[in-house]
Length: 325
Image (cartoon, rainbow, N blue to C red; front, side):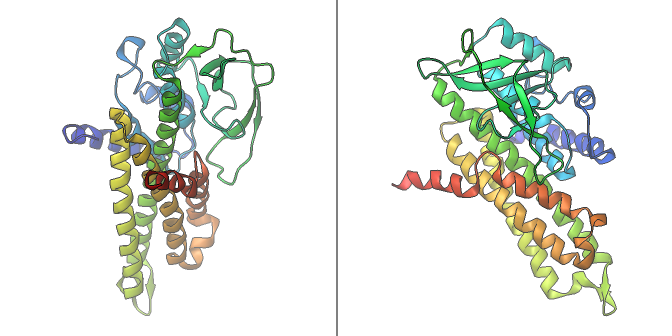
């Protein structure tokens, strides 16, 4: 999110917001037509040759709209894995396929119990280990996938069985494999933090708008001191979250040595704060905030799942404390 790209990011954010506002559920062809699936795919493979900074903008807008789509599994995680691999024919073919939309991939970069967008994916990229214990990636089209219903209905998660998986001919990481896997985890955590930042801002905006039109005792509830303070607290928390997320996105995009610290700080704060903010938004909406018609429950469930995906706040803070031991 460098300063020189602020205008481009603002335009990208505006276009993404308009597209996602039309329909909360966005199918794969729409993502392809928008050019989002190939944002980080290099030019020579039909992509836009952009960086994670641009991907982060889309992640934030997807969170703002609480959109149901397969962007996280394919364009964020799968492309991230493929770009970390040594050049080879399979990698190049998959990058071309994702950019053109002919291949929808999913990636297991951590637990095999909750893999984002694995159901219906054409190819699954699984980070595993070879006989020597070295991290490698297996690209398969025949692994057993079992849908895993979760509290957030805007996400599609599934468990992946690796029974009988062969590491012969597995794809190798470019450089230190262990470091590459850690960077993939950081990338995933920051992507979810961006999503939580977007949904937090959406809930603040909705709450402020509601406080202006909802009247009690002959005046808008937004004029009451308690409501003002609550909205101000939400705004301050979002400002802190944005600073941490911006720093983490920049660290991932530039592959900085401190990316693990930046990612842990952003993921722990942004996702934890999002749950608090949506809860406060529901409370300030009063009785209507607890109804299905308000739609706040959609954001609350998404925020709760984001808090757990790719490491809970407690887990990330535990990693941060190791710096001082």
